[in-house]
Image 1 (cartoon, one colour):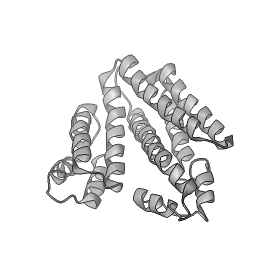
Image 2 (cartoon, one colour):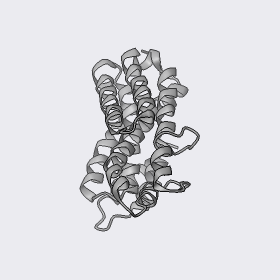
Image 3 (tube, rainbow, N blue to C red):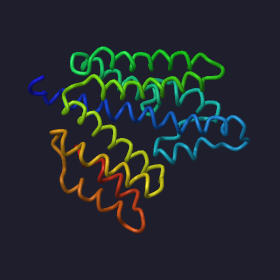
Amino acid sequence: MGIISVKQVDNLYWLGRYTERVYTTLKIFAKSYDEMIDSTDDVYPQYCRALDIPNIYASKEDFLNRYPFDESIPDSIISNLVRAYDNAIVLRETIGSDALSYIQLSIYAMNRAAKSESPLIELQQIMDDLLSFWGIVDDQIDEEQIRNIIKAGKRIERIDLYARLKLDKYKLEREIHRMIPRVLRSGIKYNETALSKVSSLVNESTMDYRAIITNVEAIVA
């Protein structure tokens, strides 16, 4: 392929981050959906606190309607999916039309879910489409650096989210060990101190989740 431009590197990196953000937040939302529907308590503020997003919602019904589907909300799932698509569309020649098509299919599924009285089936389809997208990245993109940039973004985003959710040490350790070689092989300019700090933090006996978030966000500025 030749030299990858700075702009392409940025698009590839954020394509990885946004696709992972949509995938993981959808998994969490889907698991919480029935609890929110059935609960007499407002569970959604806990969800917002866990993901460190503003609670701008008037009720659980407002949250269930707007958080997945309202593009005017920067932290909504659809907003992050559109950002993934915006990065993918300018990378059509780099990632291929098959990879792009799965992001487009995710948009279509999100639009169907917004109109459905039982949106979980369509939301599951989005997760399946994103898994297919990552499969295409592995199978059809020959340039190793391109794959590594996308996956570096994906792993960094996953660690960020897992730390915000305060998942157990094993899961974070596993993702950090998978992220480091991707960053090193990606050719991205990265912060060596932040990368080393994330690696050491996960080995501490007590998990400092906030420090992990701060340093993982500083790896690629």
